[in-house]
Amino acid sequence: MVSEAVANQGPKLEQDGAVTFATVGLPKKDYDQYYRGFSNAMLWPVFHYRNDLAVYDRDEYAGYRRVNAWLAHKLIKLLGPDDIIWVHDYHLIPFAEALRAAGVNNRIGFFLHIPFPSPQILLLNIPPHEELVKSLCCYDVVGFQTEGDRIAFHDYIIRHEHGTATPDGQVEAFGRKLKTNVYRIGVFPDEIAEQAERGEARQDVMDLKQSLEGRSSS
Image 1 (tube, rainbow, N blue to C red):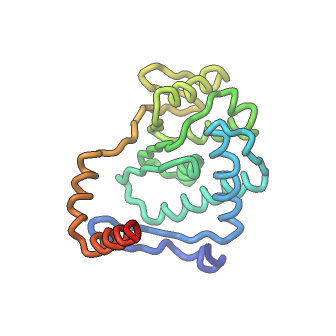
Image 2 (cartoon, helix red, strand yellow):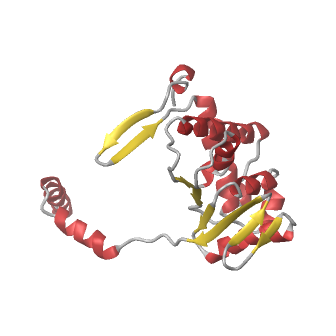
Image 3 (spheres, rainbow, N blue to C red):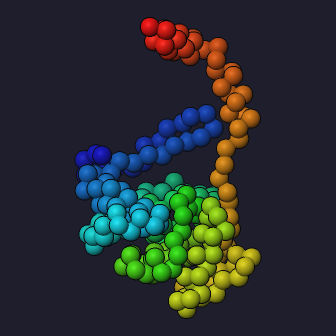
């Protein structure tokens, strides 16, 4: 968290090999409303079917959308005309909508790292559910972890007459066309095992092992 003056500065650029990181800081009010508030006190519980933990606050929702628009405008200064934009997770559902409103026509993809709930859960627990789904439709590609999550998104579109969705993932809704797909997240156990073996010879790892062995024998 930073002061308003620091937040109004441009993104801080850092190079790590071939990757350039652009970071910005959020003032406490924005952090509380956007991150601690609507993102994690409302969306996270509801999307995980923990409606008993959800707390809706209009000001926090306004802060959520405000910060998404602010972040989008920070990114615009760094964009090239052919850049492809990938956006991750529930904190940034309105991000593409803010970019589109600012005239950005780049291809934008989104991946949801948590479940997408059934339409009835959305309707009963998230007052601005329609605005959120409309925001998702501003992406060119929306990815889900499971087929069930994608079907839940399609069901919302179809059942509430916002558009059409086909089994192959073609969606037309809110005046836009997009593609949905399932991208399963997993780990590569063989690669992780190899990394662990390579790390066994490191001095800090050997020191830790010796320390643990000493505790177990005492």
